[in-house]
View 1 (cartoon, rainbow, N blue to C red):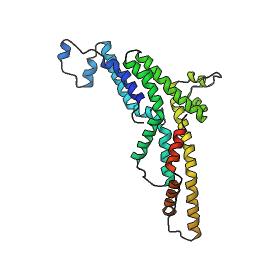
View 2 (tube, rainbow, N blue to C red):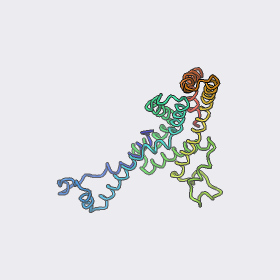
View 3 (cartoon, helix red, strand yellow):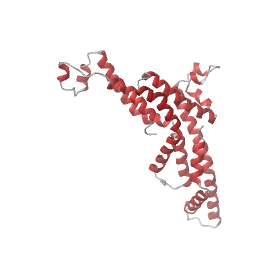
View 4 (cartoon, rainbow, N blue to C red):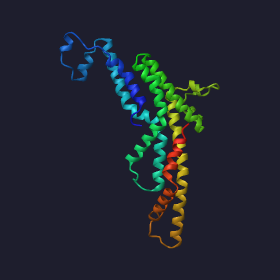
Length: 261
């Protein structure tokens, strides 16, 4: 997902101390801004100035990584992969277009993640903006809610063993390991792997009926001696007819929405 409430909240949390920094006063305020990086670094004579620059660097890094984080910690990965495999199974080349598929995946992601987004706003963003909790508390609350969602999906899919791939040896050998002991940086790739496995499993089941149609058409054309006619020209309308008669879009979208715990 290109933009998420989580990315916006993290951006606000990191930008708060920067935006709240008091303006410079005295003779230095009247000097022109430095245009060269060397001039900018040489002007950092106080620790608070250095921290402000570091905070801006962290903020820009978070903004650059926000799309990737939004994709990996939400339901977007599973939905986008399944819809892409569906288009490959139909062999319709670029139809539906990428914009349509990703737009549909984005809207379905918003529908699936709406409870999580609501909890993030009520438990983290709104109390932080109201000044009732600190930035660290808001970040911990948001992280806990996202972790709960990812852990629930991993357990529902039965892919708990994927977490051990991303743990260090000492932690992975623990017999009493619990989800609270798993770092978030290890949980996110484990969740992404679990989502890809579920998406490919669903894509395989989608491919099967269309593969049967392709095999039947190829066998009929070969038995009739029609070797110059590409089988895809005959199987494509049959696959579209089968997909429409089965109300395929409803089945695929409904299965995807129900597959999330």
